[in-house]
Image (cartoon, rainbow, N blue to C red; front, side, top):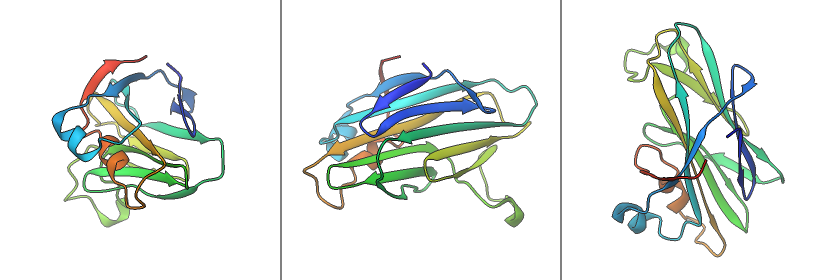
Length: 169
């Protein structure tokens, strides 16, 4: 699949600037997910399979937002993400990682890739030494009514705890 429709627009991925194929899975409604994110209206994992070829690459996961909407940081421990919110929806998308400024050194860093977040994208910088893996991006949302401190979509979009359910694409 080259794009995935969400209530805020299409999710797309690009690998070195070219449209990239990715798989889409529903997030499984585990006991834990039902406890922390029971009111989430949609939760999906978007997966890109990467095979190391000893070259530097860039993987971009982007939400093509169709409306002007408030954006906030959706990151946490071992999680980099973006949150969008208005009176009608809270929408999160994220990836496992801890992005850092390379000029500060990386002795503490446990990942073999880095990246950064722009206003509508999560960009992964893949190094020559990045191991072959599946990069997993979580996407989740809840429609109003919701509490202003709603955390369900944040948990449901965390690919470190979200379990793969049924494949959609």
